[in-house]
Amino acid sequence: MDTINDSTLINDLIQINNDRIAGYKKALEIAKRLHINTLNNIFFEYMHQSEQFIQELKPYLQPQTRPASDGTMISGKLFRLWMDFKSAVSGNDEKSLLASCEQGEDAFTKTYKDVVDNQDWEITHDLLLLIEKQLSIQLEAHEYIKTLRDNIK
Image (cartoon, rainbow, N blue to C red; front, side):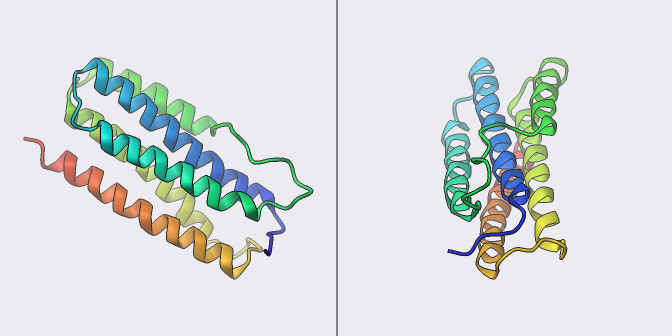
């Protein structure tokens, strides 16, 4: 399997997926606190989706590089703190929770689109196809979260 010259890219993608997992764990906590059980399955599905994305990305790390990060990005940690703050201050309801989740999906989309659109990365064609596939799957999830939010009266 081909590898890329810059493992930082792969680790960044793994970290944004870790952020997404942590964000949906936080969303599950908030949903439980608000007694909103209807979203649990979708939150678990998107957590699993990012776990799968990470497993697909790991083989592209160069063997001599450090292992894939289990951490999250600072922006992801700040996002989860903001999510807590927002749910405490503004609408403690399903619509507010979904709006917060959509913002997390926005951050994920931006990270992936930056990779796809940046021609400076020295990545293989196979890796680019994988990243584009993951972005496409995530965009469907993003749209679903947005639709759920917009359909709440």
